[in-house]
Length: 253
Image (cartoon, rainbow, N blue to C red; front, side):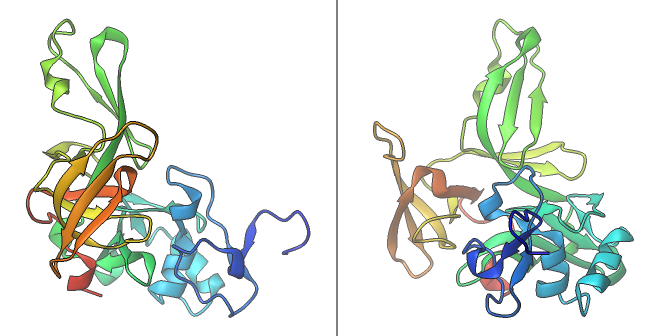
């Protein structure tokens, strides 16, 4: 374990900054498997169960809990202790009647925030891109690896799909993936910054300045302290229309 060429483990000191771990306790850290979320923004399920939620005294106990199917992610029991969990994923632990959502938390990185039971049956997903597929229907590719197919009545005039734009957010049921709501990226929407210098800051989007070139577009946000911040376009995740539709970190952590 931990030898040259080993890919199953990651040195704690080299772990991504957005993973909240004790970097000087032990040498190695379980690496999340490849999955729908960016590796830099994924937490292995073992880490969440053992190190954050403290559901096992050691890795062996935590793996047993996971193997038994006692941890549900987005409505599906996950038995792989290396399963990658990322932003907006919902975790349920039925035996404890506990529910969590992975959110950006200042000083902690991506972190499971406890939420009310009524929020555990839906998640927010960001539209990364959209395309027209066979039959004139529209496919939405989402930030967590999902692909949703919107069947249009008239492929020659697909009005149904025009409302959904890249960077907008959908509220979907889990695991059913039924669209429960649509929140566009626009001024006045509630924004959550998920990367960069202002990671974890939240508030009202005040302006959107689209400029030519990669990473040139800037979004302005006013946080709860009434401070005006700016972030790159790709770093914004919409959390609701005017106010947040989900329980936020500062309310529970």
